[in-house]
Length: 175
Length: 206
Image 1: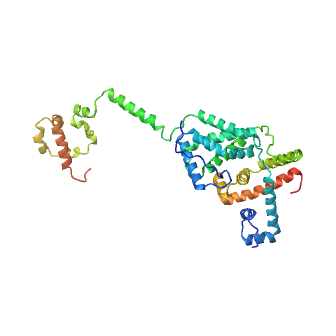
Image 2: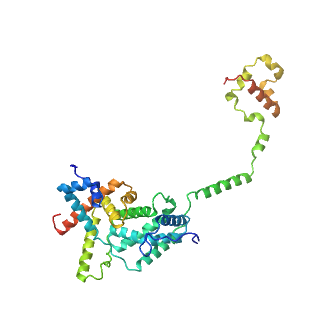
Image 3: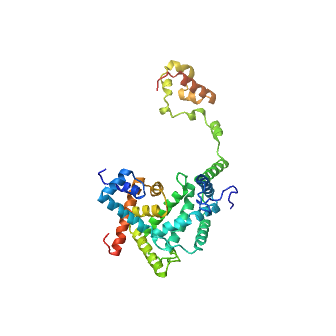
């Protein structure tokens, strides 16, 4: 092996690892041997940097201090705990809205005529079927009152039946 | 607050007579203690503090080189761990996770550039040594610690974790969010630079 050893390989050799070829290279290469000796000297120095040991009672005091500070911490909340007030608040708003009155959905249906659910005339494509009818076709319905008067005079059941019939008769594929 | 009756005690890495305990059983015991902490059981966390406080204190001391700051930092590390333990997923060992919090706290502390506090008197020296020898040893230790403190950040963290906490290259890589190859390269540079720094301090050509 002629190339110098990498820093990573040097650490392997320093720690007693490395392959026989790597050890042979260190033995024959002055540059790599010097680098290895430098690292060995650094390790020897590092081993002398002991940390002064605190007095024996220190560890118990440290434990107590950590324990006290942990006890002073606010209770830990779970990841979804923010949902609780949100759900509770939403439920409260719903209950209040319902209790304040106002017609429920079924009451609204009963109060409004059936065609109130239909789109405005200019937006209702289904009416194209009606516009396409000949006057003769309308004679039977109209009887001199006009189409709108005729439709307005229908009962809820009749108007629903008319809308259903018009939808069924509309040719497939037409807008 | 009560600790679950079935929660095991934390087995030490070594038994009283120095025989290694069953590593898998120890890991399982620690996992259960961590889960108890995640349920908010403070007494379970106390067990983790007892187990790791020395390691964390020594880690912090090597960054700040004085007892007062190391003490503050150690408490801060455990407090951060308590606040965050609900997010600990167990993908690494708890100790690896805790060391990572420790290294981050130390780096933040250094970034804040707090003034150095008075260093604790050296009490570690062997009592069988003479007074002059003890002083010399303590001075040497301090000189090396100060040189370690002057190493570039990544080299310093790698050296401290590898040399003084007996962690594997893989564990150091996990703590520092690095690779094994980078850890080895940083360690090699750290050792060489440490030698140069101390030699320069002594006025000796390295």
